[in-house]
Image (cartoon, rainbow, N blue to C red; front, side, top):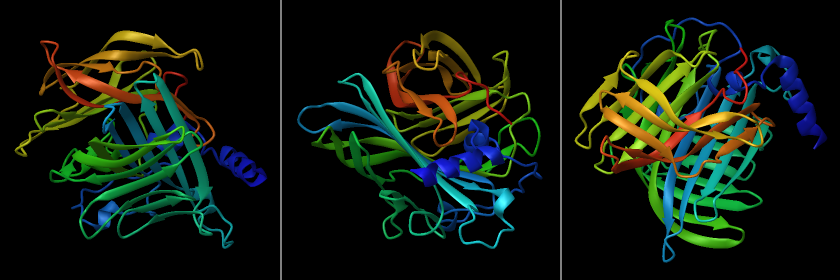
Length: 364
């Protein structure tokens, strides 16, 4: 325990415990990322030369027999610590590995979540290359090179996940062939791809009861050396698997007044036709708010989201899906299972909504 506290204290001294530093922004200025051809399976793995990286899987699953429904999130972060790169000590925290996990129990109307942080090495934490292999003690997320499936194994105090994710569609390169702008300046960008419409199968264990489940999931992998726009305080993002096999991504970055500084996203049909959105083609309009008794933040838990894919509404399936990750990334944010409705009010998909910067502004 004392080692963990010491690590957190040192990270705070280095300015690495802000939500911006570990989730979307970085701790040093950088040049614009060059356009490049992403190469797989190499680019499934870690990119330790860049400052920040994350592998993010969200989805929903239904238990066999009972029909009990769940949402789940597994996210691994890798953070390059610029201040320690010149140190020769094996104990220098040159790379950090962090993880967030969450389980939304719709029947029980509750969100369970956990978090971890450790420096890479010593058999404790790793973010390997050339293929995806993330581990933080007994938590893991790895890609099987032989068949392209991904496996997540998480053991927490109140729940456990043992889930396999099988691609059913081709990989989706976000932005300009995998180079995704995150702001008006060229330096504000990341390499970014998605694997939507994943078939999810495995076990969820809740309070000692193991359930066989199946459902759908979405994977994002993103890595960058970029800073957020200096006026950005947070972002809103959706990743939605549509029932017709399409995949919809939309996001915006907000300033303190709640206005969009930048926006983007894409829609891909089941047949593979891709449409990438420009920054002026995405609008988020809040429809309903939920007040968090923990953080006192007010989150929009229903949205009107307009894109070239149509006029849609996003509605959360459980209002209280706020995560307190101040012991790892430093952020309190909202991320949870939601449904997508068309202009007629019909449910046309499910996925995840993520909102940051409502409990506190992101610190640069």
